[in-house]
Length: 115
Length: 237
Image (tube, rainbow over all chains, first blue to last red; front, side):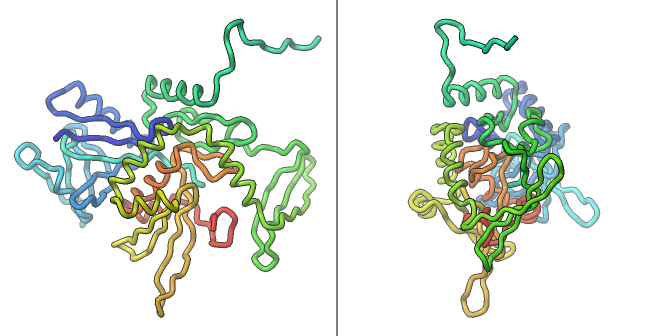
């Protein structure tokens, strides 16, 4: 199953962007969109097992993967171990994990204007 | 010499709000504005847009002076008297106190009717489908029937009541089975209209944003939201 970005949107309800590894152009476009959104302060949440959400800390452009905190419930469901193994790295006392973009469902919330 | 008023070319008419919103949506897609571009609703409902948004217009975000020149600079609620108290200043720097008995709840309600044209029904339907997937049939029925549903945070044990067009209520269980209202949490992604309950996104999208933030980053949800006490008009209780 390809990855999916669901971006909460003013005019559409939400915009869907499908991320398919077999289409390099789409993959590159999605990568650019993710980088742009993180730069603008959008909050990206990876859906995991039991619909547990984990916030994306940053984006690994080289490996086209989301970096999430492994101390939270690392999403296991969307990962396909054969093609996209979970890479766990140690950063100080916190562990991080990477989730390939083509195998994760992500909900994106725009930056808050307060209320 | 007076300036001539602009007139519409023959055969053309002023677009309706729905047409305007649809056009803005198309422009947002073309310009790759992923979260969309908010639609201004005129002077009656000035907008506040998040600071990094490329379509943030300073005029829209400026606090609007009233026609008589008085501007509200401070505001609080007197629980005992049941009054909203406003401190206002005019252009000369003179200050005055204004009292609103019963608060501006009716204004907020009517304001929400006023901004309804900024939302497309199709967008609300899409948002409701997504919410149904997130909370399941039973709680979605609660939301559809009475406009709210609860969820307890596994992390903190706080009970949240998510509401359509109102801030989310945060409750905590007390000894003896009582519930205490901690506060209400008001958060609008991208922007919101002043004098109304709604934001620039359709109501259910805002509920999804609250729910997503709570599930995925509860700490940041509290940090980013404005916390209103239960007795404030903005709490919507």
